Length: 228
Image 1 (cartoon, rainbow, N blue to C red):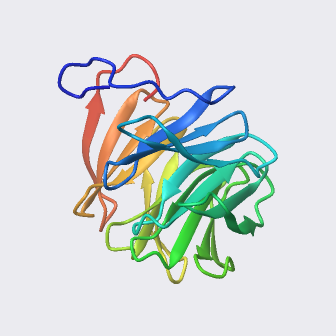
Image 2 (cartoon, rainbow, N blue to C red):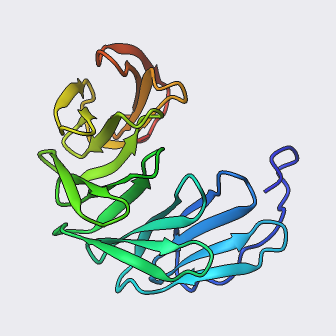
Image 3 (cartoon, helix red, strand yellow):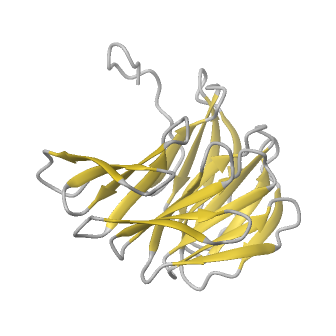
């Protein structure tokens, strides 16, 4: 869509089932999509041309993310795996295996050395982004819906169906703070661009803003009539 006029800029056609995720590349020149049809696609923004199709997952794909240098992408799938791919050719480089339920989100660290995956099995796992080796496991009492690195790459925030978000030390896996104030499951947690705050979205119809250093609740955003 055109961000100013709201008019359709171009159509991206090629998936055969619902699309679960769509995101621009960091340089704004490409778009990534992930679908229930078991494929992810890389598109050129201007022409809507498909540059690469990723099709070696055995079930639906929940998310796809670029590495910061735009050379790789990582996908998270309902087949309990995440996979790392060459972003130019769509060739699979390696597989991240170890989750026992669907992987719902995966992301590269800012320095491209690590990958974090979030799963319905109640764990997030930190992996070596070059070797595919698992380094650290982070655990909640229920499913984890997303896991995200802080802008400096030193922390991770996870959001869970257990109603909490947690801030972790990337290297040790130590819990630095528990964000415990929502009365229902969480749908998302994200650092602010400066890394100083975290916003959480919940089934309790609120979003909350937290201090990313102390875990202190700073603000409660109320007004929605359904889950956020």
